[in-house]
Length: 159
Image 1: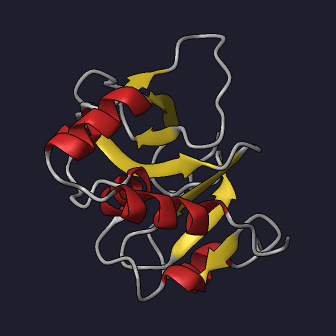
Image 2: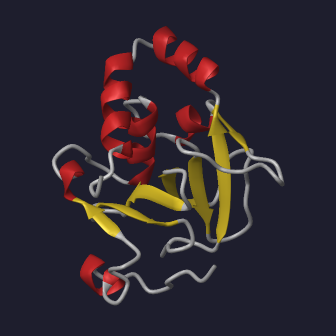
Image 3: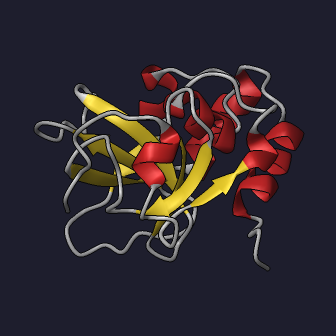
């Protein structure tokens, strides 16, 4: 995978790559914060922090295939699946080699897993739904919020 090294404006970054990405303006007024917050919101966690995320995901092993709903983490340096230390970007797998993620202060974007300005090392994680549901219930997070957000994420603009 070749990462785009320079951080540019969204328009400059996407120029010439329009066939690879889909900007999702439907999230513009719904998502504040960065990629970690967006990824946590997809899981129904109304708090964007690594602790919450790490407690509810397990790294895929070699040979396991990613699927819709898996968490994708980009690292600029060595992958640290245990603590997520050094993680530079987070997203959610759409199940077809594509990822949806919030690019900093820019928009939410659908992109191929290997099109990123955030790092060359990628690790997929499977969400442990039983543990997540238990944690969400324990701390009073809304299942309805999680379902509504997931439906928006996985709705395809072209379909």
